[in-house]
Length: 284
Image 1: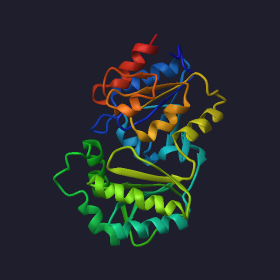
Image 2: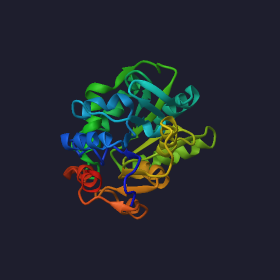
Image 3: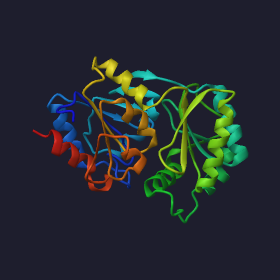
Image 4: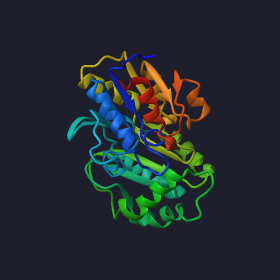
């Protein structure tokens, strides 16, 4: 066990976020407590930076944020590092997604996520009620909100720098077909894919993941790789959990995640598992 880690990296969805996409005040307060002890606390999420503010309590503070599965890192408003998908890859993937009628959201830096208007009919159809039983309520609510409030429906691709693609399907068969299609595209244009549920896949720059984001954030703060701790729950956390010196899985994580970590929380994300874990281990 890391007796007192110098840096803690926390995933969001399924970790500090409950299944209704909220971070508790208790979690905020334990993070404040740890930072007051001199422990650096970072967020490492698959979400884009613009998605964070609306789901954390007022006054929520961390030392830095790694977003889009390692594509960008921020300290306050300062950009520490930033990778971008190529315009060629963006165009190629949207064309292929359209043929397969795959729900997508493209995330340009500094502005709203984009879906093209010509694809709106089948994108919206993927979010039709009722919710499929195998889709998590947190992902379903996020997609509902995206359709209603967050997607900018555009006639053409806008922007020159893009943090990631997010893809969703209401059936596992549909998303698995799309993953196979992405593997075919990788033979022509190299990129990285990551999943955080059985119904999604995300696309980032080649060789970028949460672990590379953690490395860059540690370098920014002149922190070593030793005495680092991370908590996560899903496949997109695996590179980070394998990189840090002490890895913790959420109680709600699948078994294959729990099998590779050093510890497992006693409570789920819906039971404030991160709060209880950090309080029991590190509160003075």
